[in-house]
Image 1 (cartoon, helix red, strand yellow):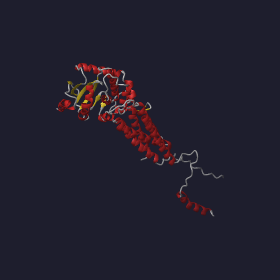
Image 2: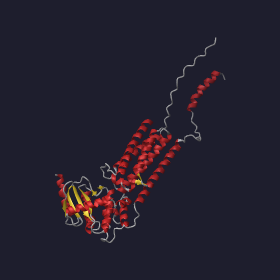
Image 3: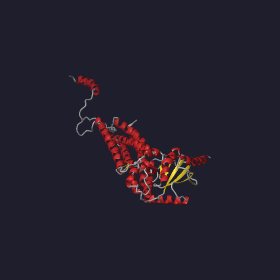
Image 4: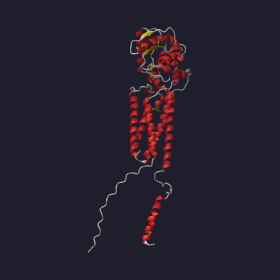
Length: 268
Length: 155
């Protein structure tokens, strides 16, 4: 073949080469992996990481709650009653609610139990959940050792904004006064029944300085109002002067006129 | 969207996520109150789900965002893969935490939800970046050679 003919043939063959299908060759060792392998690697890493994170979170949350060594009733009902309602420290309800009620209660007192299991749920549904009233807890411990033990646990739960869940649960599982019913097992079980509560932390903080201050402040306020029994209440406009309130019965009907009066006043 | 635009978006979002995680971590360690209109932020922040084996979830989030940010700066295939793996697994964990807020804690943390939204967008961007053909690295323009002198004919 002459030189000219060879050049012509090369020019004709060149486009055919560039348009030809690529033939896959196995990735030689030391070369970056193929994209398919890369995607599989990413997918595997995602699944592994997600499983590890979720699994560790579940195990960690279980270990920081407690084994249920005492039976607790009404846990689901209590969780449902208070679910989604703003809690901060000792306060339950909308911070901007026009009416404030202070409650003074002992964990052991039967009257407090009656109020918390009859009137309180209706007050929550009608006035607190609707943002009209907020309630402040002032725990008093005067009946006996069980009172202080239970109150310390309740107040410490307030540091995790779950005070009202624990208080309500203890009232729903209340035992005989000074019978030793407030056991560590009962408290741990009550704490474990509260969604999201770190029970170990509550136990650590129950005897701390912050709880001591809370108890002293509540006792001072109780004396200032001149109360001598539990439960006792003070109601008034938020930010204004609260007046002692003595309900005729532990039903929402006995609280409603006073709440409604202050709610009306706030609208004027 | 060019790879450069994707990388800038990834870095900006990762920085925003890191800022949220850093804020939550700072307030947790200093015990300060969180700015939160829902009232649920501190409840979630103090719940037993806020730590994994003693390590705050916010710290894990901060590390993940930092990792995604670094992968956004790099142009290697490995960086794209690691970025996508971090963002997608982070999103999966975030969805689990949304379930926990709704069903276990019964409280909502706005900061956490904002972080979850950022993670969702990051997951999309990092996966898009991973699936695209890598752009060839810029090649330096060939240096113009001085014209070779024509050989001088010897006389």
